[in-house]
Amino acid sequence: MTSGASSKPKTYTQTFVEELVRLAADDERICAITAGMPTGTGLARFGERFPRRFFDVGIAEEHSLTMAAGLALAGRRPVVALYSTFSQRAFDQLVHDVCQNDLPVFLAIDRAGLVGEDGTSHQGMFTLSAQRSLPNLAIGSPKDEQEMRDMVVTAISHPGPMSIHYPRDAGEDLPDRQGAALEVGRGEVLRTGDDLLLVGFGPIVQRLLAVAHALAAEDGLEATVVNARWAKPLDEGLIGEQAAGKRLVVTAEESAAMGGFGDGVLDALNRAGLHIPLLKIALTEGFVHHGAVGELRAQQRIDVPGILGQVRDALGVMRGERPAVSSATRSRSRTTAA
Image 1 (cartoon, rainbow, N blue to C red):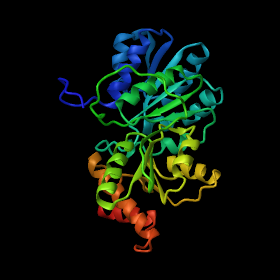
Image 2 (cartoon, rainbow, N blue to C red; image 1 turned 60 degrees about the horizontal axis):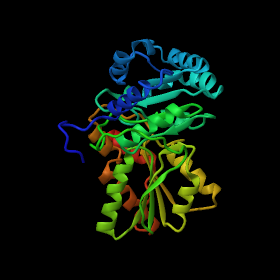
Image 3 (cartoon, rainbow, N blue to C red; image 1 turned 60 degrees about the vertical axis):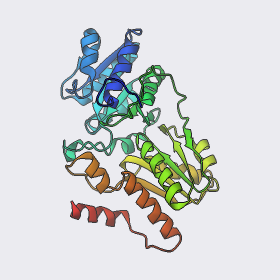
């Protein structure tokens, strides 16, 4: 933890724009686009520094992606920053203008995951599932703000389209440093253990580390924790290697379960011939309503106590101690409780 003068850790959004401004100072090809969200995405700061390279197209997300495709074809390195929920409006343009032409467009997906008091329409739940099927598109999410900087550098230098998902949250209060390019499609092992495998996509990895510590201290179970970094391309070799011999694999993401990161891991294990029980930690079916982010995470059981409880429930089912509860039943009960 840093002991700097700042009273609060920087947000992922602040870190994103700081790194982007740093890179743009040395690379005149970099330009930034948003659709009526210059303040929320942080790009107002980019616009102040580079006004001729900043474009706010208004509430026209579709146009932001088509414009980015044109700029990329002209040799620029466009960055489009949109809230996750509003990026859905530009899905057709992402498919046909950007991905079909394999263009180097950096799509910065702000407010990925639960947003909170902005209400149901702003929850960033569905973008990851929608994007996973798109050819040529690489999809990443950082575990902390330092890795956020690394992913900005990686996306700017990537030869094709890349989507980076990050939350509205503050980071881990880590010291500032310049970003460094990551190998696309390569994850990392953060903790080793012989009993379970916990694989996370994005900042939820921090919660998995806390869960692994609790399982070791309270249950005598040792878990390996993998920071996937990339939902696409997924590091199937690393995940398969770490899954072998484990009694349970747990995936964690702050997005819709259907078609999401966990399904990608399940497909990878099946392709590798590893038929190991898998527990998907994700948002349940249905829309998530208004509330403080911490309360919503607790309601969805994706905070540390909730994830820990779900892992223990799954292990209890495997031992025949507890009946299985369907995700639909959990979703209905939470909706009623809310």
